[in-house]
Amino acid sequence: MSTHSEDGGAPSAASSRIWTLPNVISGLRLLLVPVFGVLIFTGRDAAALVVLVLAGASDWFDGVIARRFNQMSRLGQLLDPAADRLYIFVSLVGLAWRELVPWWLVAVIAARDVVLAAMLPILDRHGYGPLPVHLAGKTGTFALMYAFPLLLLANVPGAVGTVAWTFGWASALWGMGLYWFAAVLYLEQVVRIVRQDRRPAQLR
Image (tube, rainbow, N blue to C red; front, side, top):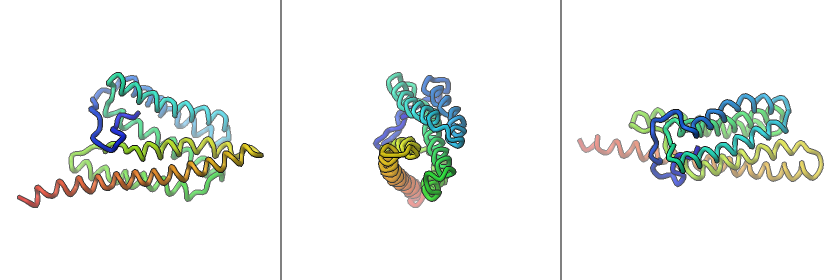
């Protein structure tokens, strides 16, 4: 759910509410992750594509509801990116397991999330929660989610498979680049927060 400021500024005002419609939609999207995993690992590509499309549509829909009806919440700010990352990770591992993408792609994208997760305790020590999602990160996530259906279609013989493979890999590499670019911006914010908090201590 897009309850963060996408320009990298301060997050939108978020409540502590739990039972909101956007949170329910995000929760349902999370529940579909294991279903999607089983489908992609067992080669049921058509059904996996349907689940992935539904997940992508619900991601957009719950963000619209949250903004339009003022149902933004701190729980939603955690659930939404968690769902995105799980779909990306399950898709990558499933495609790598079936030898449709190399394992290095899994490692590069997973490493980014490990780096960002390592920053959370630092932010917590300085009184901050997760920082706002950058537009680059959302765009990178979209590109990766768009790439996976195309890479699945690459199995189709003939021109369809060739075109899907070409555009799928272009989208995956573009998404990976934006994913890491957003991580660099995030790390810069963390460094700036730490430095700002140290300055008053140095003046005492």
